[in-house]
Length: 362
Image 1 (tube, rainbow, N blue to C red):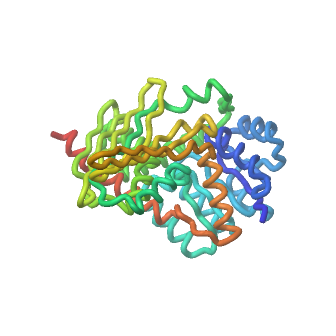
Image 2 (image 1 turned 135 degrees about the horizontal axis):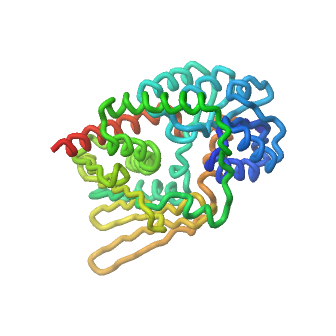
Image 3 (image 1 turned 120 degrees about the vertical axis):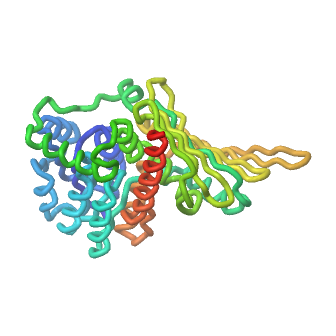
């Protein structure tokens, strides 16, 4: 089955990740239509990829009966509303993470999905990376976990992709009313989750959680079989771009560290320990495609130490997740990341935020 696809939002993740991947997967997908609120971005991206159908509004794209599925790649505050509209129009929906910014918005999306027969998938691509999947298999015979380290210590994407690609940006042509409306919606959602009187460090911290942190914390949940029992500690610093959190998993503790700065490196991954075993994998920047990932498994005994390396794995996680999206629609394959799965992320973000706010108040 070849699915006819429409894209809503043509920013950097669309230009650098999803459009090239869809073009590569032409046996599964036909990219037939696009929408962006910037007329210049819409025209230049569609011209470059020779996409004939160009819509001024998301609603017009959803109304196209010749589209089977849509990818929601717009700013986060619009995900829920646009995904619900696409479901109502009978489309299958892929939503870039996060599914939504607020618990209330997410619940209405979950209800819309449950009431439909459409596949709705949230794009947590790190959970589809081959090294991650290999780690899940290794953990099946790993023994009791004693400790976990999760990290995102990174430089943002432009440092990497500006060396290899050029992203088309708006030429000042987004209508002012749309900008004001979008900003007001985002502020209302941030007020709902952070508190109307929340300081800037808390607001930025929540943005980082729903953006960068959601990748690793979602992967942590998947790898460890669920969310932690509680948040033992959390601290925000560096204007909200540094977060350290400690999680109680009952028989073990997990530590998460996050930092965004301007040092050119991408140090992200998960390390899991038992009494005599360790597994470790690192993610590379997603902005340079097909970079290798490996899984290292170490096992020590009284008189030996064995280190195995699985990989390198070069297949791109964005490609694998879109293949999984297609398989769920075409073959009824399990959907590993429906909107309901994102409930645990929103709940965990809220708990981290509550502890971090109490720390700031001390």
